[in-house]
Image 1 (spheres, rainbow, N blue to C red):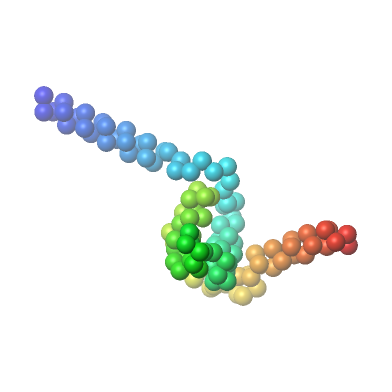
Image 2 (tube, helix red, strand yellow):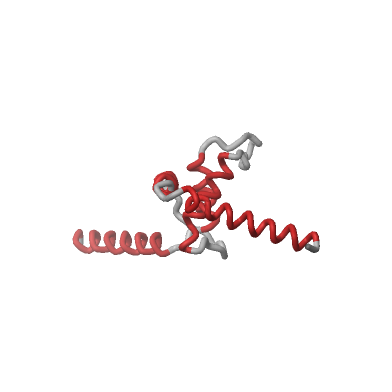
Length: 118
């Protein structure tokens, strides 16, 4: 009888573990394009450094990892290593590091020009 009890407990554990691994935490319809995650990390980091986020009490966000964790929930992405990824991305030359910012600037200029009828 004890053997059966142990086997039932093991089976329940495996079912719970399987459900946990295969359940989507967030039902967001959006994801970050796989080859753009580092670009997003750079941009989000710069936004944080520019004090663009505040907490629920209206104070500037003071924990960058928490901001990344919240965006991770929203986009079903893991940003637990954002700091290491940012540091590693600085190994490349500055032009390469700045590429996503320049691309966004071009898109913003195109939007502005289109809205102004240029």
